[in-house]
Every structure is written in structure tokens, then in C-alpha cells.
Length: 336
Image 1 (cartoon, rainbow, N blue to C red):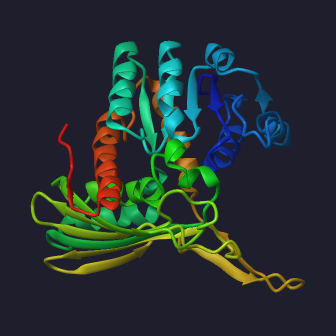
Image 2 (spheres, one colour):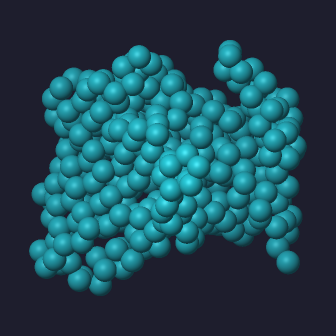
């Protein structure tokens, strides 16, 4: 039987906090704690309320939380990642941090230094790479079934789950900061060369009443080996939609092409009373695989992947894409 460990969730700002908490609660041998002292002004008791509803132990401060756990899951607003990682690392906690790593290269460097200085395991939360659909595609590429990948197009669209996602002071940007990283992570496992430049076309047509950053965006990426890619990363899923959104990826190789809909496996129907469409996913849950992978590394004392190396590389690409949209010009990706 695996040794019991304590894991704390830091902040309920991110929508993923709830699904991560549920996975942790369902995992044998894991004691779950939470803290959310920085609730929004219109809902200051958010943390205590949600913790109570989910049956999770709640503590009043992050300092108390990190003193009582072996590992943390950081699900705060993007601009909070640096402070939360530094606090957890100083306490010796293993860290699973929501993406993106940071809103600036300076903060990313500080996070890297904190993790390295204190020698704690670090993993970036990128669950899509663990899906069975992508695993199958990766196997095809690794076998050479598609030849050399030369181009790709993707759409990672979703609902706007919270206003802070389009507040640059808190998220670092808008749709680009939130959605591009998933696709870039997948492509990093299919294309050996890195991204060298990014361009972006953006607008703020959707959610104009609350947005202070782009809600619609198409990003173009160029790799050092000539591979090109295009990503639609818009907050274009309507509130009335039965699911949060999805991720579609088309890959073109010298010997063939594949179209992938990562979250396609769903039961579909209508609510008999309201007529509202219903979609219920089935199969392995990516968040479950992500959390269990992290827990296995914590228990074994091994280095998680994607770790800091991957997190820094992906963050530089996302920041370049964001800056390309702001400047309306092609931006080079900073080299590590």
C-alpha cells in the first residue's frame, strides 16, 4: 500500500481547482487540504464555501497550508504563481502549478530559481498530453507513419470561465495566454525543432463588456526546421453550450495527415424538460491522469514531466505570441 501524503490546493481562482480537488479526494492515501485567502471582493468567503461544499479541510492562510502538506497544487491567478511557488518551495513542498508558468520572463526566472534552490519537484499542469487520443497520435508520429511533420493547425476554444482571464494585470493577457500553451505542448512532442517566431491577429469582439485583453486570436508559429502552425485560441464557446469547449488538431506530414478531436468521446442528447443539449464525456479523465502522475512522482521522489525545462520553453513561446498580438508584428521567441 502506498504511503499516505498530504496535498494542499492553493487558491480556488482557477476553474480547474474544483476538478483537481475532486481527483485528490477520490485518490486513496491522500489527505486533502485547501486555502483561498485571496477571494474576490464580491465573494471573500469563496474558499471556505467551496471547501465546505466539497468536504475539504480548509485553512485560513497559505503559510499554514504549506506547513502541513507534502505537496501543493497551485491554481491561483497567473500573476500569483511566483509568490505561491516561492512560498511552497521554501517550505519544501513538491509543486504542481497551473499553466502558464508566469506572466513575465522575470517571474519565470524567479520561479525557476526558487524550485532549483530548494530542490523541490515541479510539474506544470498540462493534462491534454495525457489523453488517450493524443497518445495514439504521438505513437503514429514516433513510428514514422506520417513521415516528417511539416505543418499543423489547431483550435483550442472555450468559454470565458472568469473575468480575470481577460484582465492583463492578473492573467498576463487574454485568450493567447490561456489557450495557446496546450497546443504548443502537444506539438513539442511531435516536432523536434523549437518555435523561433510567432505572429498573431487578435480582436476583442466577444465579451467586450468585461474584456481588457483579446478574446479572439489566431496565432501563427514558425519552427527552426521550417515547420509552420496556426492556432485558433479564442474564447468563442457560447455560455449556452453543453460543454466548456475543446481541442482539435490537424497534423500534416510528408507521408500522410491526421485530424484529431481530443475530447470527442461523449454521450450526446437533450434534456427532456428543457430541450437543452447535454454532453457527457466518457473514458479516462485527463485531470485524473495528470494528478495521479504527479502523485506517483511525489511518492517516488522522481522528477516529473513536464517539469521546469518544459515550462520555461513553453512560457517563452506563449509570451512571444502574446507580444506579437500586442505589437501587431512577428516576434522572435527568446532562447533559454
